[in-house]
Image 1 (tube, helix red, strand yellow):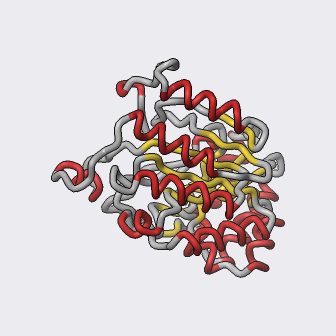
Image 2 (cartoon, rainbow, N blue to C red; image 1 turned 90 degrees about the vertical axis):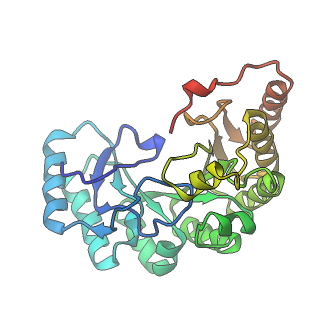
Length: 289
């Protein structure tokens, strides 16, 4: 397989075939992310992608899922993306689900008909980084879209038949807007009604604007209990018709895996026990990105 730069995929795609179709991220401006710093976004040549599909056809016959790397494969123009998916279907017929990252721009550029075509061609799940439902926070981290637009694009993806997985970040608003961020995030998640929610805890990456703000005293980092309070507020405010809420990423202090609405009360009780000191939190040295 031909890989360039940093290869990033969601935790749930750990066992998937990782097919890199783009290099970098089409936005690459978020203040907290250092993954693609200094890396120019590009779509890889079809010839290279096809070589990797052929490699997977020979060497990856036990893997039933495939993930299109990197930061935003959905940005690929329809005239190239649709044939790519169809080729995967022909050459890797055992693959049951294809996933990709998506953002507001890429979802907005695709028409409803085009999204449905991609869904019918095998693209089954989209991963979207909401990070926060608070517009002040979204502007501060240079996410590039307000909460209402996030809701619209999330609903657009679901209407086209995709499974939708949405990521939020505990601590991303800093201390001053912590609760505003948490309350708004619960509301936006409820409005989007994704199939999966993943809550991560902020870990500052050297070289990013947010890390520089922290070093210079402009961004106070939350401690473990503050992040746990945010988690409780987000979880309590999130109403999913049917979905999974995960906070079991390596960065989190308290692993949580809940099916909503079934597990709501049990998880709130668990978080309250942790806040009361009855459950030990993950130590700093065990956290990771």
